[in-house]
Length: 368
Ligand code: PMP
Image 1 (cartoon, rainbow, N blue to C red):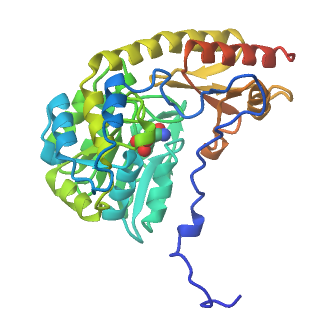
Image 2 (spheres, protein in one colour):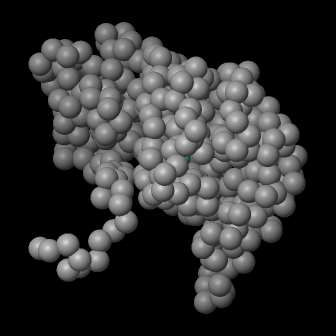
Image 3 (cartoon, rainbow, N blue to C red):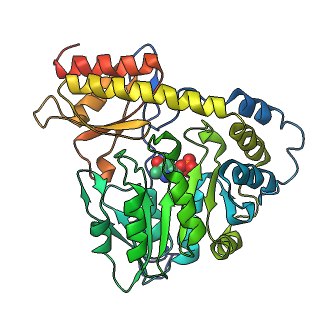
């Protein structure tokens, strides 16, 4: 093959490792317990499901993807201006839109060492270079990020809490980071798991966006609202940034069923509270049960836990993953994040959590 004899992607595109969504099936077991994608065991609000089902008529009509109805509902729920919100096909799309609008060849963007894998993908897809800032104890630390700043830095992508580690940096630290960033550097706060954080200082995140020209926050309906399949995310930012994102946004990037279901989900606070309460209860029980088995668990403020395995042959994460799959339990391998001897477990239904704990107990005792 000679250079120029076929189309080539732009430089950097082939450096992207395509996002691996993880396994969706098991190899054995009478039932499938999928605890691999941080989906909520309670599912969506019945009101959201009903709103979705009511969308049968009008499927031939293009949606108004500027989504005024959904932005109004989000604005009312969070006390923010709808004109400063843009909705996306999941928050993944919004992160990619930010990268597309604000990064290009020659630019650098910082993410943390075990940060969400979509960041380096979005950064590379925009032609820019991702820079991984070190973490301490699987937790973001601000000085590690500041040490990575160069004259080429144009953005910092930070999931708080982070996936797959489940850890969290207090908002005072985010403010310290913001204060140290030059004003032309965009700070992207990815708050996909915000609703699970009990020390909920996310309203200060919203306050910071409101006060700054260089901070945006992304949120999702995929986690606490149980609408992952409908792909609904939103971004809150300064009007100038929202304007830029609307210029690169796909014209019909969010569907009418998604908009209607999203509005209904926001109206069902009781469902959100029940989902958080279930998670709180089972996070404690699961973490405690795993520690009792001698497994190390990174303390999590989200709806998943990172489990570290012994390095002794027969007890490693890769072996545990296969062992559990035979029992119908699907956990998430996180080797792609550089976490080679850990698995991520989503907090699921009582039955699924018990199945995972029983499976790990059998695995750790080396039997069946
Ligand atoms: N950010 C983080 C930290 C996530 O874990 C996820 C989901 N895996 C997302 C963003 C994207 O979620 P969605 O595109 O479904 O809104």
